[in-house]
Image 1 (tube, rainbow, N blue to C red):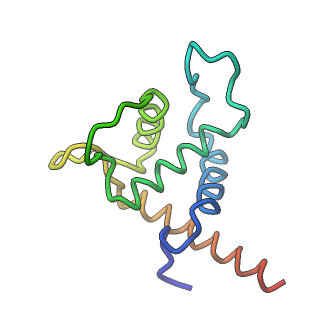
Image 2: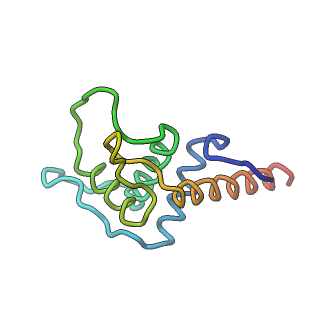
Length: 126
């Protein structure tokens, strides 16, 4: 099956599959969320899931530059974007500002989307 993209897969299933891929790569250490938090995140894979969701967001919107300003905690998202940039999934967009998905990043995300869809079809056949 050719031509499968991230847009063809349910977001939750794709995020879980890409988070597993990132975790298998061992590409980042755990980041502290805040000095003021009393408890750590409950899911031990929270960073990988967040990174997968951010990568999907950049893929779907063709960049990360927001259309308007919204106050939010930027530490985790900044670290996620830096980690994704470090492994070559996103890059700085010099013309428009912000970051955009790289060709290799888009290829990786589409490949994982295709394997996720194939696994889903195999489960449906059984």
